[in-house]
Length: 83
Image (cartoon, rainbow, N blue to C red; front, top):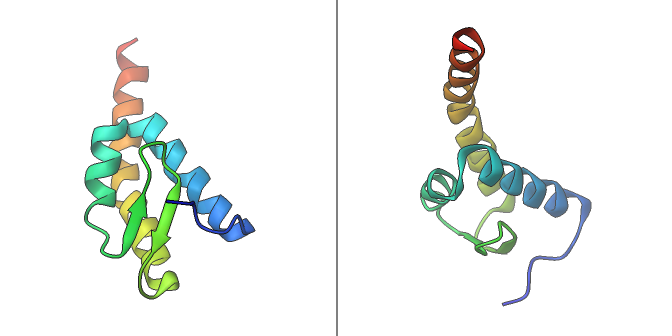
């Protein structure tokens, strides 16, 4: 399947997903992405298809990362204080 059109907005979302794969790892990232209905993502983090309201799906995607971010910050602080 071909990736979504490479508009600036889609590129930003692709980059966001790829960064989260790097930060959280593929297991956590794809588990979270799997909960977003209507979003198809390739194994490399490229958005292949958005079925439904694109703005709503983008909002869910950003909210997912907002939920995960405090856990990452806490983990980073713990690593910094124990080093």
